[in-house]
Image (cartoon, rainbow, N blue to C red; front, side):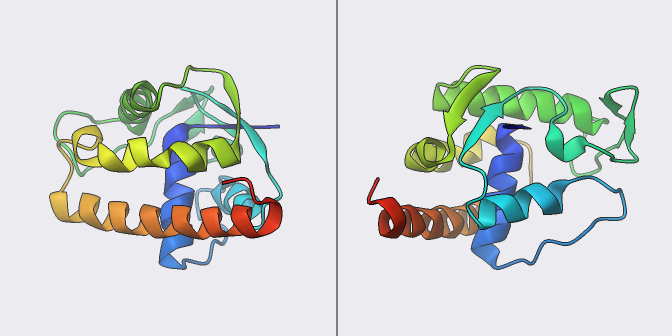
Length: 156
């Protein structure tokens, strides 16, 4: 079972919605591997965490279990680790999830409206146009996943 930050799940849905092809990144992390597993429905259950997850595996910016990458799109955070912990806590609170909770991907998809309905609050401090595009692409990705689940198992 994969451990995944909730914002990474929604990043993957954003990329799925935009039609982005996932390939290896210069940092060496596993985003493309796990993203493609989710695209192809090879991962059905995940453990959502507020810590470095399986995507961070092998990343050159991971130093002694901590992300040392910096962010430049905000003035209130310098390190990606701090911002991601903050963001994941907000998203999980919004969705009613707990750190370490094991959940079916289909259930996250079913509850994605909570994330989408509050996306501007969750990403308060980020560029509004960027958040609007994120919302649009995540919504498309979630709709595509919903259609796949409905066609495959008539679950939703």
